[in-house]
Image 1 (spheres, helix red, strand yellow):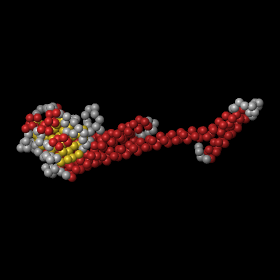
Image 2 (cartoon, rainbow, N blue to C red):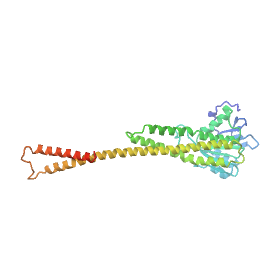
Image 3 (tube, helix red, strand yellow):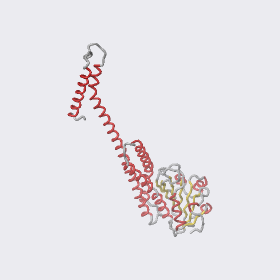
Image 4 (tube, helix red, strand yellow):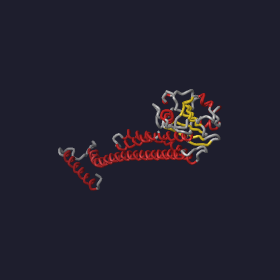
Length: 335
């Protein structure tokens, strides 16, 4: 194990080199610098090189000194890329997405991780800080339980990236459960906004996990020549995990749609009940309004104009008509 005294979480980056570590073959590793990276050869210990993709020095080293083919380098440095796998002339490249756990960042804004290896070394590139690589580095340096070979490093890094997606998926499911348990139309707008936000987050995460599932399946079906016995078991577990994530996200989407439909149906039913009541009230008072309108015109010949009892007689007739109308509506089961 390395005898350095700096905690892994505080290892400083060196001009685009996030960290580099030589694998000692017993689950431990030794941190090295740019000089060791640039002078490395296949006769040396296997090495894991983790780079900042945006660094000019890292890009220059990849293009001019790494020995990686130009087509693979351009793929590794691509600005926008979806999860995929391809076999290059000199090695295997895997592009995955990991959950963004950085402060102030949205978890659905997943971070791209680019992994390349030809069996003697592994090169990874990231756009932003990714905790999964730090976890594996801590296992090597702090705990002595890290990978012993390049194959194991490749597989365990992929597995850890996918493991860290799990809590985010669980949080989404907890959120949909909470919304579903408190589903009411009294605060329909707020509930619908919460569902819409949740669906948007789900869609954004699934956008990357679906091709990530396909990429892992391809890795499992077509391993590189340098893959050891740990390849298939490790990748099978990672693939099954991502398949489960995608299925859970699909269920969340379906539940969110059902809840939105339920809210819409309840609101429509409430509106229909209100319109029905208004229609019945209108039907009851329409004849009465007609009679009062007719008797309210100021023309000669209106009946009862000279009678002191005409008003009360009219009120009685109107009341009787109201009773008859209500009886008819009840008979017709309108009310």
